[in-house]
Length: 174
Image 1: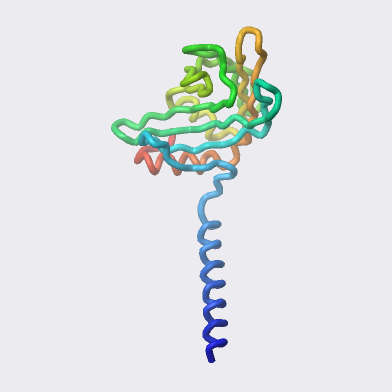
Image 2: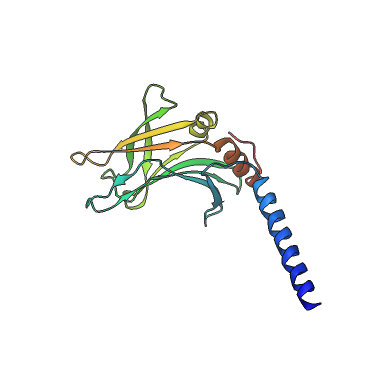
């Protein structure tokens, strides 16, 4: 009798686990985007680049991280960030070369964040152009003599991620 109850318990647990997996899979397909919240009241979606950059000492490689964010307090404010492990030598602004879906490259001005390891672009216009895109290539100079960095992003799932961020910010997607 005890074995029957234990076996039923295992079957019930397995059914509940399968149901939970099905519910998780039923949500929107965000691709490789990770949606979360920053400590400063921003809702974010982050994505690792498909390529790796070699660190300054040449020992390790890392993938830069692109983050899209919306601040929900007051008027929602959108921004893009590129997080690096190696600092750029610029102090306030940096020119970023941008290519969306293999189009012609164009240049934008991005702000340089703390310790030169965060590049930031404010506004929703950059996010607007990405929502219908499938690929983003960003390129920048680390410094006058230190070469270029390049980050390639597969944007699969971006419309769903932006929609989820916008819903959390109580605003329309850009």
